[in-house]
Image (spheres, helix red, strand yellow):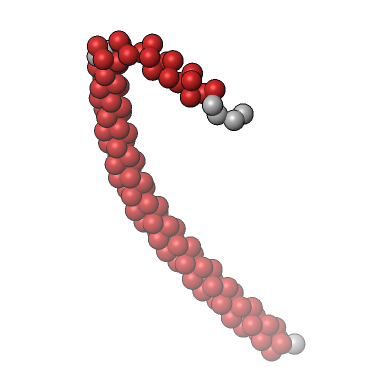
Length: 102
């Protein structure tokens, strides 16, 4: 009977040791995965920030271009030629509009 208990105890110790090793191995794996994830996340965050800054610069450039184009359009609309020919252009547009099928 004592021998059987010793065998059971030895088996339990062996199982415990295997479980402890598996637990430790799993802990190391999880730590490694967390570290890799944080590195990847850090890299992606840096890439995203660079892309965001690039896009903000592009938006600023495009907004400045829009302001410039609006100024050009305003200057063009204020020319004498466009102001004096506005009634004729309106008449021409109405005449062309009548000829179009609806």
